[in-house]
Length: 260
Image (cartoon, rainbow, N blue to C red; front, side, top):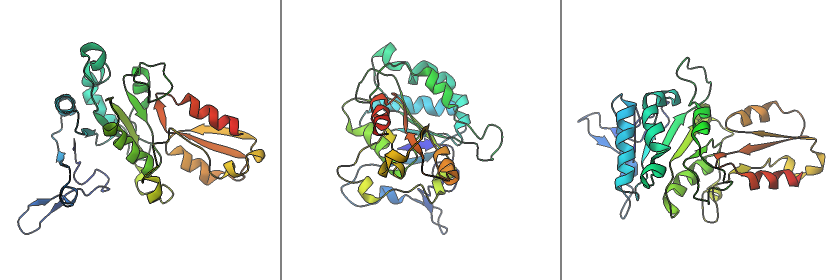
């Protein structure tokens, strides 16, 4: 389930998870009515207390670890209102109480012209809160995962991974707003189907075909990748995307470097 301020419509009119009957005002949720058997899906518009709602969802993720529990900020900056919960529970709860949580936070992030307090998910705060020296998300010795995905497939696999693996970790997803409707940010069905998985690092598909021509490798994360591609004039610069920042994908980055 997902909750937060304006989750049903989606703050940027991108989700439309619920449809309202104009005659009687009843709510219809298509994802909750896809046929049987299916899992339960719920989407709720919450009140304007980030602290209270995140606290409830964190507790709910403890109560039933089989549920994917998502809290979405209207803008990533609004996580400020729940900083106490993030510091004292989400990022440190497992170390203090030996209880795992799969709470997933969606924080719209990116300077897209919305103005003060509507621009940044404060990525640096979560990197500072990360307590890990491991270089793989398969290793359980870390307190939170932090990702800045650039493709629908990687976003899907991040959410799916929260449920299919044998342990639980909180996940922070930086979600650039402009990428929601960006024509270049697409994935094929094959990238979501059998045999596909989350990619912590995505190599440059253009330069990978002729690595001998590459003079420089630029690592980037998030929507800046698409800006860099649009401005690239020659294929002598490889643009490698780091999709997961915590745990840091050291082995995947080393593999990308060795290719060039």
